[in-house]
Length: 209
Length: 209
DNA sequence: CAAGATTGATACTGTTCGGTAACATGATCA
DNA sequence: TGATCATGTTACCGAACAGTATCAATCTTG
Image 1 (cartoon, rainbow over the protein chains, first blue to last red):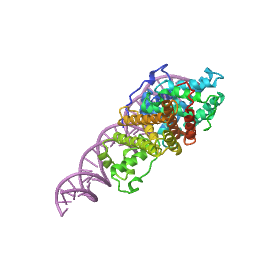
Image 2: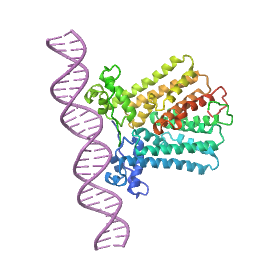
Image 3: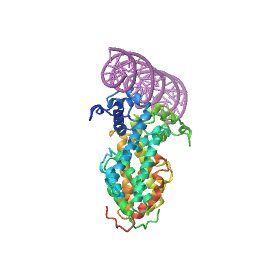
Image 4: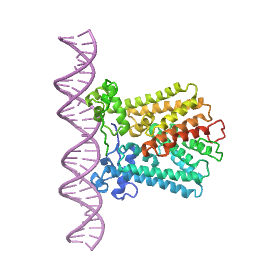
């Protein structure tokens, strides 16, 4: 296979004095996202973190558990995004939803979109016993529940259905980004989602649900 | 990492006398899909195909090119699915769309869904120069064009928008299947898509496009 | 039957992988 | 100061990886 990766920028960024465990997680986040959890080795992560494999294994007892920790970080970020949006638009569920769509649809390479990386990672983990699997499952469940709650609070019709439609739309856009670039079908996510939301306005003539 | 795979059933299935190249492609399809293109080695594929690595390399000059050929096969299947649906529902674009949705939404593990495997594989290929990348891009483009053409022919409102919405919905459902199982947000894909199609009926009051 | 091509089997190369042992260094803190 | 602990460094292990060489067995085809 071909997997060109050559980076080592984490160890002297920002305040520079981050403890090795944190630097490892930062490097892992970057490399796991770019090359996939299977496509990058622990040695490359340690090097990118400005440390070495031995120190890495002093903080994480295996690569699988490092992956799980990486996913936990992504999941944590996902809920923080929702919290930030809630703080930004208090008592306005619809605005929170719209801001979320704008957020994940805005940047073409979904770099900060932790949800994207979560699902990507899950796809690459074939072993159902992998410790990262339940992390992803929990994160997706939480994410879905929160989105559903917002849809319910927004006063739109068929809120549960709308929530799942939005979920799939966003997840499909992310997959589209990764596989065919920002000009694929996911390019107009914001518009597509807006139209979908609009179709869930009070007029609930659709009986398909 | 943990990647348990142990299968070798291809070499004596069906007529049993398939030439090794075909058996290799069949085995590759199975294993690449289940464990990812990065998660399975050529030796495992050869063994599952009832042959050995040497014969594999006599037919495919590298693993990357085998992956590309695997993806080409998936792309070929994708267009054949559309052709079959066109033959099944001639001159009825809407029926073709609905049948397609039912097809990809029907089986919980999207096993026959080659589109799913295509995008999955693309996610795992970080190298933009990988020969499989352009195969995926071409397949997705063709797929999207065909879906758009059908939406246009179906007489629904905002057909291009509907096509991309359906595309994202399906792709998101596939990602959901893989990451959190058949009970995730993609469970109700058929219902969700039907509601979406319904919202694109003649009443084009949505101005968000 | 004989010549040629295709296949199978085994062994091998060199590299990378996940993971560990051993020792040296640097800080901290009593 | 001296003991302790986290970290860095190097080297190593066994396994798996992509890819190749060699030779025997088979199968086609004249």
